[in-house]
Image (cartoon, rainbow, N blue to C red; front, side, top):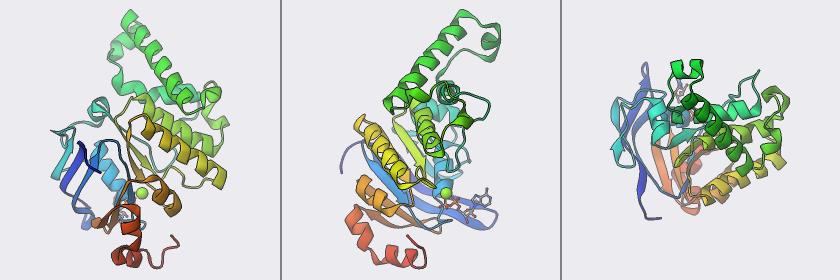
Amino acid sequence: MTGEALLEVRGLSHSFGGLSAVAELDFTAIRGQIKGIIGPNGAGKTTLFNLVAGVLPATVGTIRFKGEIVNRMPAHKRVDRGMARTFQNLQLFAGMSVLENVMIGCHARTRAGFLEAVLRTPASVRETRAARDRAMAALAELGMERLAERQATDISFGEGKVVEIARALAAEPELVMLDEPTAGLPHGDIQEVAAVIRKLNDDGITVLLVEHNMRLVMSLCDDILVLNYGRRISEGGPEAVRKDPEVVSAYLGEDA
Ligand SMILES: Nc1ncnc2c1ncn2[C@@H]1O[C@H](COP(=O)(O)OP(=O)(O)O)[C@@H](O)[C@H]1O
Ligand SMILES: [Mg+2]
């Protein structure tokens, strides 16, 4: 697949103490792709997302998004620039409605400051309304608007996974990073999440997909990056990656 490089990672490394979680990593995500990132547990997939999203500081190597180096950019600014992500463990807030949870995704996009929000100035009221509209639109896009007023604790785990994706969409991203969006889901719900991923990609959003379900990865992804011990061991189309002896041996002993 050729086209504009939306995300370019070069020489990226990160270690925790002496443990090298991401090591000298190079890869590119082309605008419009669904790019899979796979690898055994502990391979560094979540760490990679944390570095790209700005949750962890990227001090070695470069992360370029839409041509701009973002290594030192705070996480909320990266959301502003068009990145959004979901978390490996469901992170919906109890005590809030589904809609309010999705509105959190708009946060980085709202301009009114804290004081304005407290004083309920016209600008902040307008922005809250706009955020509500955008959150509602994101839920509707994924066929979940019926859940809007439900409490976050009151929906199924599978619905929660889709609501989390809606929250990422509410930021109106160009790149979405999904960290194991089907983990723990029954088969029927997996198909639903797969349809959601296809839909956002059809809407023009580039997707980075960390996923253990190989059938899903192989059927959804244009291109797959395989990590092991933080390093790239293979990269390419589903067929090539599946047959790569390095990949086969990395997965020996894993039930994937
Ligand atoms: N906050 C942390 N502190 C120390 N070690 C960590 C931390 N986060 C991840 N690791 C280690 O880094 C490696 C990569 O972890 P992770 O990125 O979560 O892998 P994956 O998502 O591919 O399963 C693992 O060895 C893990 O134990
Ligand atoms: Mg992980």
